[in-house]
Image (cartoon, rainbow, N blue to C red):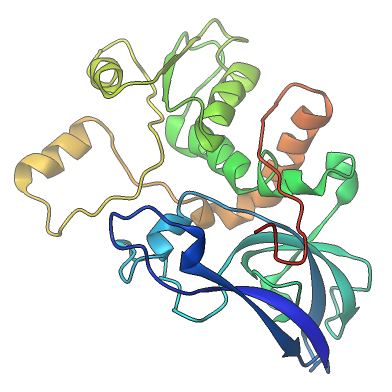
Length: 278
């Protein structure tokens, strides 16, 4: 048995309430470290705090692909850690690993099939990059532009990025510049207000409009006019998790840009103390 600290959801802020520290609780507990075949003991190094987590604090997330956190249970999200012991054929002690469902606790025993091995050399040892520029935000931006934007070098296209200061928007703009637009004479713009979004989205010269990533509830079925508007403007829902087969190549490309200083991002880091930064 091993002593651990974990963070659980203590209360919900309400559907439209602002989260406060009292919505969470830090607990001490014990962890059975006797591994079964296929299990891995990991030590947490980095945890990611992302906007989508606000939905998970509600009883209903409003989506069919994100589940709510359970009261008095450990919360989870993107995380990076190191393997301390393993009974899974794909992992060994000392491996750096990540998961999209990493529990917020100092140590954990997890099914090895939930983990992905990371190469620290891809980010020059900056492991937190695997939760940002070279992680889910980076992959969302890269694959969104590639798979849904269909931006092509030399096509003289115009791409407008809404919310270009955000985790995904800022990267999408840089990716468009790096791989297609500026190389081929295209144009890249960013806008920061709803009025700007409406103006750009209805301007016929705009070829690509990666809007801010949002979670909203649209009661099914959609009306005829709404369906026609979606089809007319080529508005579709994009989920990066639907492109798992492209993640490895995407991570490699993103890491190459980061190491070359061509793709940059800023993040807030909080060092963990005994109470996980509280």
